[in-house]
Length: 235
Image (cartoon, rainbow, N blue to C red; front, side):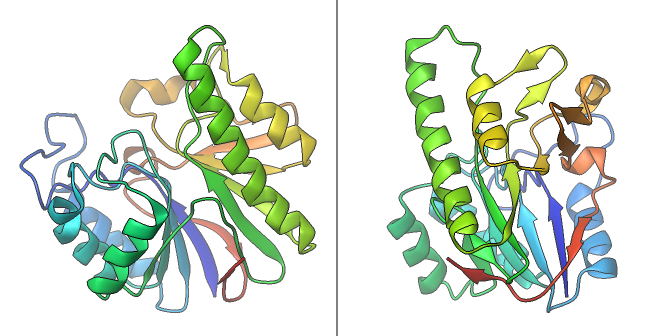
């Protein structure tokens, strides 16, 4: 059993908003499906790091969830900045249960572990230390991240963190997120959000934390192998 990750699927199946206006995104839904099926098996797990659907409501997102649910493996999804359909944990879980999307789980104030490593994370935020409202958001995101990591630490397993926003990118650093990562000696972080020419400004390591961009167009629309592991269970 393997753990994979990929971010920024930007699925348009419930709304008319394709990504073809951006270079390199031609036939991207078909490419995601084909590449996914080549390497992911039903007993594998894939973390999807946000910006999952262009929908603005759960009913609109249903075709995108149907697409994801049909793909091989178990999927653990976290929120991105374009996931406007995202609601409370109760509403999201009710939606998954009602539609029998039984291969999909949410990463939201929780963690998943297989006994060796733990899947931890949250959306994150782009914050430069100036905006009052942004300060509230980043403190909330840091709290969610710390809650997720603590669950792993308390169970004695290695936390691997998944974010939507990069904690460090070019000359930008989200100090609040970085402080949480360093506090718990996080070794690996996988993130999305960055596309196109922006990929030229990614950095692979910051203060000893290894950073990996997994947005679709940066990984050839193919899930990235994270670890060979067992079956993940929610903490």
